[in-house]
Image (cartoon, rainbow, N blue to C red; front, side):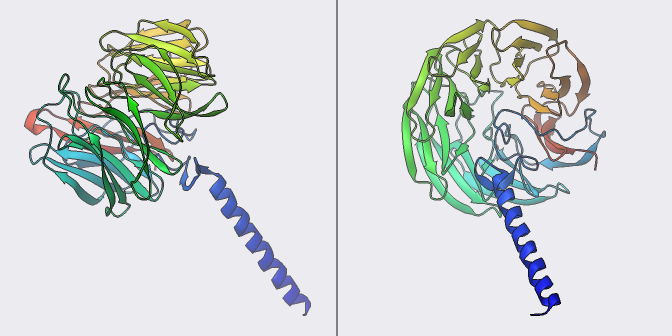
Amino acid sequence: MNWLSIRHVFVCACICAMCTLSSVTAEEKGIDGFPRLSAERDWPWWRGPKRNGFADNVPVPTTLSETDNVVWKVPVPGRGHSSPTVVGNRVFLTTADTKEKIHYVLAFDRQTGKQIWQKEVNQGGFPEKNHAKNTEATATVASDGERLFTAFYHHDKVVAVSLDFDGKVVWEKDVCRFRPRTYEYGYAPSPIIYENSVIISAEYDGDSFLTALDRKTGDRIWQEPRPTMISFSTPVIAHVAGKDQMLMSGAQKVWSYDPTTGKPLWSTEGTTFATCGTMVWDGDIVFASGGYPKAETLAVKADGSAEVLWRNGQKCYEQSMLAYNGHLYALTGNGVIFCWRGSDGKEMWKERLKGPVSASPILANGNIYWANEMGTMYVVRATPERFDLIAENQIGSDSFPSPAICGGEIFLRVGKGSGSERQEWLFCFGKR
């Protein structure tokens, strides 16, 4: 073998080694063991890749309007409060045609906003009543990078549906009977993904459950009963106190479960009869809030002791909160924003904004993006030193879904107009 041949073999070997290393690195950067998902590029489920409302530190615009920093905007058919799910080059939403009683899953092109497909997953069986602030498409799509997972309430049951990225149904499973009677307020929890399962909550004044289904087949892995009380919170998987815990509030308690088996780990009295927000955490402290029929926010040690560190009488009922760098940020339903120290609940500052509030906050590049129901998007610096309002933006006339922020872009679903003239829009903001 001559020198040139040896050199060629050596170069090829180096390239192959680099490709292998690159492949391994790409897998290591996957979210929660899903290598096709990127924490920097994707927003694959409710509350984002870290499940706590944290985006990456890529700068995104703070000045937003129907013309400022708009990359594209497209009309969304039907009505829904599900937040955008962003994976790869697509954006996914659920929506409902309440007149024809049809549930849809929608896919949009991330670059242009063009609608790629619209898949009907159910017709008929809508409940006779629903809460005025709820919709028939409130649960946010979850994705493992290969499939989509949704949950809908119709025909007196909760139904889970899995689709591929082309809109083809992979499987459909009845999760449980669901027919609220005391409070006919509909259904809201989003499906969450953990390892090989998709976990779904269904709580009402009947047989209530947490259920884990196999992501590939829809077969039931485990089922754990919940108290017979209607509640709307989406559970969350957090790595706290050295292990994965599934955190959930509602039924007058704060709960922790083993997400592998569904078995309870610990619980403590706290929050209220019904909650809607998803719990948050910072270090080994977890936080929950509720607002019906009373108001309470509390902090609990997640080390198994269930020690309550502090409580107060404020409430984030429909919205989640945000825990960051030892502090808890809360924008209450009546529009007062607080910053509390996480360890003892000391109030660092508070400021009167405008309510009511249903959307949950997102932290991006050190700023908190938080909208009220009237379409006002506040951008507040996440600092305990003082209240620092970066921007106050108006987008549309109503805003219930939370934004998705990834890859330097903000995806936001809003409504504009009222009554029969109301139209929903999906915006993409950025600096492209």
